[in-house]
Image (cartoon, rainbow over all chains, first blue to last red):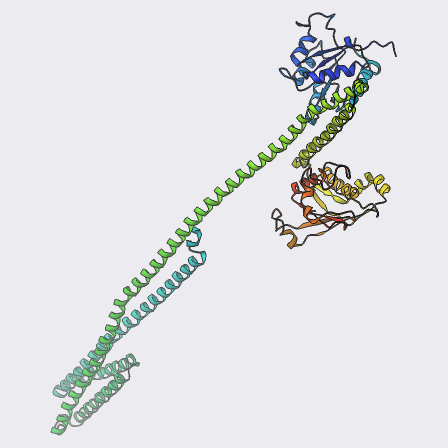
Length: 147
Length: 479
């Protein structure tokens, strides 16, 4: 198990605080370089399509999973999800919705659109660490991902 | 208002009835007058017939006299046979006259007298004829006394015929006058009644017109009022929804920074607790505790704003007995722990959703368990009965035409002062310190919101140390 390759995670989150907290939580179990961040849906799509400024594949590797916030400026999570799932090259990447919203509508709609999980942001840092550990564990050790 | 000036339907009815009565009276009078006219027309005709017969009779008498004279002078038998014929004619005319004047005694007397005079003349004629038959002539038959008798007889006959005519003429004049009077009066009577009927009809029409006009105005006012009411209800509805939306959004957005306060104080605590000096750790603890409490408040506020927000399709008859028995299973541990006794009577079906009533009774039961006395075991009973009209009329929001269930939850807990009976249902209102009893004070306000949304009311009775009673009024449902 320990020889599993650590997964590459891309976080789309516009809130600086949340971004910091998510990074801090993931750093408990993953090396810093395995986690990348973008601040909105537009940047996310640019990153995935290796468009400038994300044209260096070394610096910006293709993610194994995406953590997607729903409420973001410019292009929000729903639009970004639709675009990813509509793109032949990108649709195989699991997208985990990671948001403050717990509206039944959002949950249903995003699953229908092809998201893999729906997680509401936990209230405390302790809980957040539990969640990131679970994510990391599940996607790197329990399930198999496309190469 | 204006309505007081409107003729009532009763007034219109009275007008109509009066008009009808007048028309009936008018018809009656017209008929009666027509009947009179017919009667008098008949009478006039009758008079002229009597006159005609009398004239004929008089002519007959003269004719007979002539015939007799002719016979006496010439001895011609033809005169005699004409004389005989006129005798029969006279008899017939007399009988006819008698028949025509049946209703008039003096005429009858006159006719009888006439008949007597004629007969006396006839007797004289018969005697003369007999004399001629016997002697061949009238010699020795006539004498001055007989001549005198004949003259007197004629005069009397003439007199009596004139009298009969006069009486009949008087009668004719009199009846004719009555007939003329009647004919003259008829148009006047008809005109008067018509005028009266038309007046009443106009008054009725005008009243109805006025009434209709007032009615139309009133209807328009009602429609306007209804529209206004609908608008206001919509406005209220909208603002209610907006308020709920606001509460939802506000509490949702409030959670954002709060989550971060908690998370960063967690991080601070985790990584720098040992580096904090003096009261630093205590302050950090306080920050965390306050954030946790605020989080709880916001969660409750969210729950409150969501309570009762169900779509109409979800609303159905809810069996309270089922909801409560399921709920009691959830409470099993607490009940055992507190040695509590919870009894339920026969409970009705009410309108709403299972989740709502689960929430209602969860809040009420846990409230009663929470505020139990420390020295005796909690005893809670839930019963239902039909609410009486006096109770229903105490609440303006309830419909007096509808039957209500009165569901009572009675406990033997610490109770509360009467003055707080309303306050306990207000959001975040607490009667006790946070340290004595935990909770934010949201439960009963959610309960009230749900009950009110389903067309009911909830109120509490209590005395300190005497337990509390929660009363719920909910409308009957079909089936």
